[in-house]
Amino acid sequence: MRFFVSSKVILLFIDGVGVGENSPEYNPCYYSRTGIFNFNTNILPFNGKFYAIDAQLGVNGLPQSATGHTTLYTGINAARLINKHLYGFPNQALRDVLKKYSIFVKLNNQGYRCKFINAFRPVFFTTTEIFKNLHMSATTEMNRYCGLRFADFKQIKQGSALYHDYTNTEPREKGFNLPKFSARKAAEILINQSDNHNLILYEYFLTDFNLVDST
Image 1 (spheres, rainbow, N blue to C red):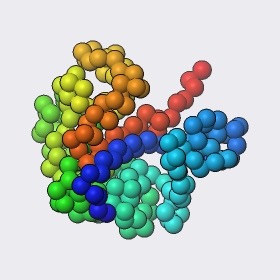
Image 2 (image 1 turned 135 degrees about the vertical axis):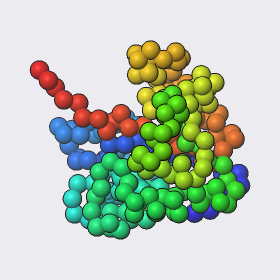
Image 3 (image 1 turned 180 degrees about the vertical axis):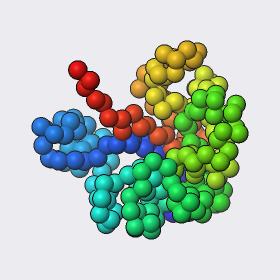
């Protein structure tokens, strides 16, 4: 993959969401009014397009995060590579692929500027002995292998990073002194940061949580 020098790309990774069945009874995305996951058209706002791909990647079983994310970030079929779908964090084989072939590594080697804009909580930076050898998500491993800086809460306050809950509701409820962001404000931050970077990556994974009715 090669970028033109003037290229500016914002990659929004929304976890746990797919096209699903063409049925309003089972699929809430059926009601999309913007064109995203709308089965009657593949036209997105501003003449964009979406293309549905098979998350199974030619390997039987339920698609999982470690192999799926590694595939998206490297272009290599990770599920086929290890002959299974791997849940959670990449194993050594997948980490080796991320270390050599990730989009961050490739662009960085070509002189382009990348930024993983998700901010990490203070514990990530203050207890490094815990995380030094701890396996993490494909995105985190990719950023670490590339030697890029991890964003922190100070950058959120400066308007140069976003928490995985871009509104900051979760950390605010836990006592962190952070501003409350709207969707528009979060979008402005992404756009403004793209001025100084060729690729901005934001990962939103609250959509991947299972909501269980306990009543």
